[in-house]
Structure formats: C-alpha cells, structure tokens
Length: 174
Image (cartoon, helix red, strand yellow):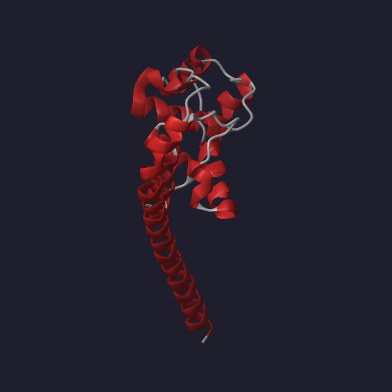
C-alpha cells in the first residue's frame, strides 16, 4: 500500500519548487515523517517528471541480472541507496537495501530466486532447460566473480582512506 498518493506527492513537490516553503516546513505542514522524503520526491520529479509519481504495479518483478547490475553500479560509484534508486527509477531505496542484505547474507544465487511457489514443470520443459543450466550457472559465477572484484576494490580504497586519515592524525599530533 502506498502511503502518499501521486497527486499528493506532486502537490508537495510543486509547492516546494514554487518557493512555498522548505522541506522541513512542508514535512511538518503535511505530516510527512522526514524532510528527506520530500527531497527524494523532488529529485525524482526533476529527473523523471510527473511520471515519477505514478504508482507502479506491485507485480513488477526485477530479475537477478538487474538486481546485480544495480548493486554493482552502487558499489562502483559509491552511491547511496537513494541515489541508486533515483538512477534506476526504483520507487523506494529500501528495495535496494533488501537486495544488498540478501546478497551479503545468502550470496549471488539468492538474487536470482523467485519469491512464491515454484511453477510445475512438465518433463518436456525440464528436458529443454537441461542444456541451459550449465551456461546460466557459468554466467552466475562470472557475475559473482565480477561483483566480488568490485567489492574488493571498494574495500581496498576504503582501507587506504582510513590509513591516510590515521596518518594525517598522527602528523598533527607531532
């Protein structure tokens, strides 16, 4: 269920853009929990226009390849969850947070799992899919390898920045 209608979001954003108040004032005025919610709406509106507020079908299913692409982009660009959601036009950053947590706890394979009850396959379907399993397994392993490389690169840079900060602190003390 959507907490705020698309019309309401558009009204608040247009009021903000017309100079009708800052994000803090508008959040208080309209009973919105956080002023950053309004900032996110403004960013969505500026990037995608009025269609940014269209309520999406709850049946939208993102495939594992897309989820992995989103996470790779976020890590490669050191982007925040809201920035990543805006870049890929994903309605809520918490969706990406969930994918990230799933990846960290269960690995790449978990991103490819479908929710819900598995479909019943006939013997013919199983036979036809048999040849693709090896290639899809190889693709998944290659994606996981690429993602781990990106993650390692990110961690190395993070360690270097921490070390650099510690070195500057030591030099200041001397």
